[in-house]
Image (cartoon, rainbow, N blue to C red; front, side):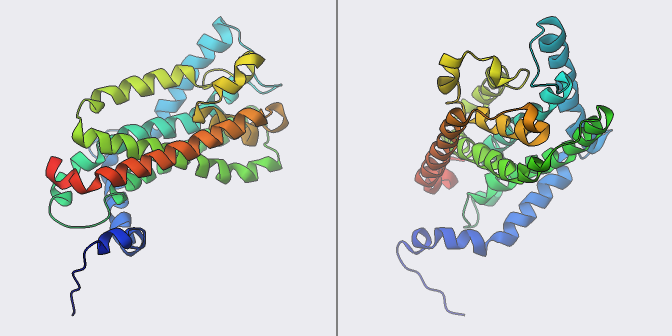
Length: 272
């Protein structure tokens, strides 16, 4: 076997190496899935209970106490849960990815492989939680006798957008967390604040028209509106100017995350 040592070779073949190391990606993702709910009493049910309880609280506070309107004739609880799905995925992916490099310090300091594989594998675990939560959604659609329309077929497109929306900030914060451990305290604050400034417990249609474009700078606004449109159909309309701005936000944070991650990647083994 011939070994070729060439300056900059790893840099030039980085994206090709991502594909070459796909088996490592699968191993890391499967390992994270298998240990996620290990030694817990109710196991994967946590993936269902967390968004469900949050949905109940938001339905009582925003729907019954504040009496905010739902979208069309859709039950308020169903509208909230349709927004909870992408938000729970985003917040879980962001929180787990931020510590992924540090928790794999032994692996990173010993062998070469594209480090981007580590946080990406972590986000896949959050994606599996999202798919498990769809069980509650199906149950609620049956309970409320609210069949989705043909637009539900486009839901995988918005799941992909949600994945990219989580991947960009996730890579950025993961890289920053290696150098500045302060970010481990910043992430919970970002997630908690984001839950209330994003249209999770309420419809984005309650935002005054003059503020909607500015409000849509939050990339999760477009993602949540897209999920609701797919699940609630004509009861939930997408505000397309704001949706396009949210897509630009997703693309910007994805570029920023990849750029910052690649910029700091060489220093991970020394800093971690």
